[in-house]
Structure formats: C-alpha cells, structure tokens
Figure (cartoon, rainbow, N blue to C red):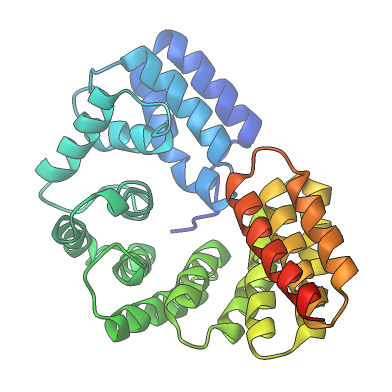
Length: 307
C-alpha cells in the first residue's frame, strides 16, 4: 500500500468530488472519504479530512448505508471531534461486530490512534490480531499499534521490539509517515531516546511537520539539558522558538521560551531567564505553560535570593 498516494485526484478535486456527491449520491461520497483516508493522514491533512467527513456524516446522520460499514467507521474516525455520540457508538459497534480484517489497510491504524486509547487493551489487541495477516503495510501498522504507548498491555521490552519491527517494515516500504510514527512512539518508550528523537526530527522536517518539529526539538533540548549540554540545548530551543513564531504555534513558542529560561539560568544569565519567562506569561490562554513559567520564576527567585 502506498500510504502517500492520492489516486487520480488532487486535494482540491477530492473536496469538490465529495461536495458534489453529497448532493446526489451519499454512498459515493462515503466511499470517497474512505478511499482518500490514507492520503489525508499521510500528508497531514487531518483538518481537510475532518471537514469532508463532517459534511458526509451530517447528511447521513445515524444511517449506515448497507455494505458500507467500514466506510462509515472511517468517516466517524475523521470527524470524531464533532460526530454525534450516536454516530460514535455506531462506529464502535461496527468494530466490535466485524469478525475479519478491515478491508482498508489504513483503518486499523486510524482506529487505533483515534479510538484505541479509549478502549480496553484486550479490545485493541483483538482488532490487531484480526488484521495481522494483511498486506505488508497493514502488518507494519499492526506492529506500530502493538507497541504504541498505552494501546495494549504489551510488556515494555515487547513494545520496543514491536516498534522496531514496525520501523523496519516501514523503511522497506519507503513510507516516511509510518517511519515517523514509529520513531515518535519509540522515543516515548526508550530509556535513551536521543538518537531516535534526532531521527524523528529529521523526518518531521522532511515531511514539513512544523508543529511536530518544534516540539521534538524541545524534547531533544531537554535531553541535552539533562546531560549538561547547555549550548546544544540552547540551540535546539532557539530553533524551536523560530519555528513556533513563524508558524504561529503558541504552545511551541511557550515550550521553547521556558527551555531557554532554564538554559539561561543554568548558564548564570538570570536577567535573560526572567525575560524569557515574562514572555511566556504574556502569551494568552496557555494555562499549563503559565503554571510552568511561574514555577520556573519561583526557582529563579530562589537563585537570586541566594546569590
């Protein structure tokens, strides 16, 4: 399966085709949502997928067209943020009553990522088991989900092995999006994730995932901090700050500023640390970041008092 492929239509044409189908043939509209699910997710077009799914689900309501159960499930997955509770329950029932593998390779991955964290581990494991004999891409996706933090009850060592297997399979398939997901999961379960985080940053940059790149740079900077490499940490936080400001990503900006404050304090530059933390507090509607900045200010005040 070429997860990045988009068939014979580009993004705008997909939207137009779905819009037209919604007016005349809802079955075709639903099939289009399913058909382009992989394309949307592999290209970071979740907002586009959600808009298309919401339009179709708004027309269908709680009616699942005969023979299109999995297509309906995919639409609910994409539109999960705004789907009606009854639609979500219908989607859950589709998963529970499906006895064989999914027909669309991407379904097992998308369902696991979106709904898997809210399901019992044995339910997730059953879905993965039903799909582990699929095509090469599906088998890679199953291993990714089997090792993904919080999805199954796999022991830590088994989870790491599953993620390494997934990474290897996605590499063979030259699927950079799958590789990125596997690396991103691996960095969360390894005791020494520096090399994996660096590889994830490279892929995020190649895939033009600015929000992921900025936050991963902050993650790597924190690892540098812990090992006493303040100059390397500072450089990563600076890069993350630039990305966050350029792409208007306030969470990334806040994380980078807090990190810069810590590295400045560690280097003895207390005025610079205070300036960075003040900048965080000026950012609106970021309660968690404000709380962290206040904590850092308390540490800074203690440092100044003891100086």
